[in-house]
Amino acid sequence: MQTRCLAGRITVVQEQRFRLTSDDGRSFLFILDRKSPVQLPAVRCLKESDIPVRVEYSGEPNTGSGIAHTVQPIDELPEDRSWRHSIKKL
Picture 1 (cartoon, rainbow, N blue to C red):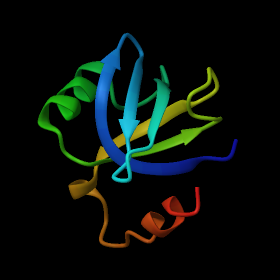
Picture 2: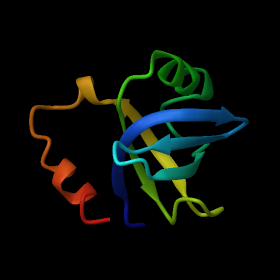
Picture 3: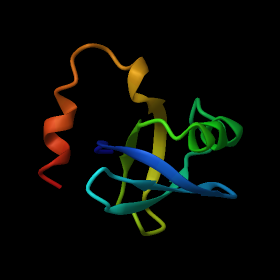
């Protein structure tokens, strides 16, 4: 399973799904993995706090196969943030 990353802000949370909006205005729909260490109440809190997050996912966003495995506030990431450069290529 190949995983990829996106960054943005969570704008909608409904059932096991949430929408991530990137800084450039693109919107991505994900289903939260049942095995994710982050549970839905935490995703709702991230939405309400309106802080930037990083989503690690597999599949294709905006389809039933876009599965979010982790959701982290960007402030909690290690100093190496080289993953941000790959976002611009999507």
